[in-house]
Length: 124
Image 1 (cartoon, rainbow, N blue to C red):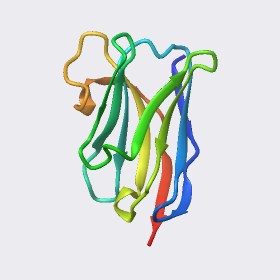
Image 2 (cartoon, rainbow, N blue to C red):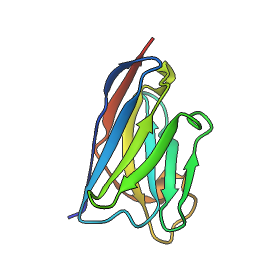
Image 3 (cartoon, rainbow, N blue to C red):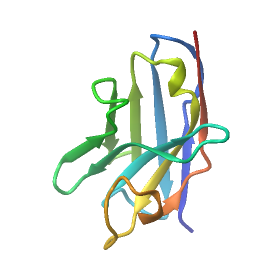
């Protein structure tokens, strides 16, 4: 069965860094992969995505220049490097894999598979 497992979240001070991991079983990261986040009481928000076949990456304006999405094919793992963290980055972060023929990378319903999420808390 397909499974995505996020890890690497935790508590960090503003200005610090975290590296989130998304390990996959039952699939390989050969389609659009995204990171989304959701804070309590708020809608799920696009953070970053990659079109691996084209080598393109995409970022929300709120994280551009601070976050980087990447993958390690040997480990079948996708990463989200988060630098210069801000309190407003606090959320549960989810890894997701997009449907092969679905639409825009920033639209959460276009993703077929989701991990359980990992909590990121950034203190002032």
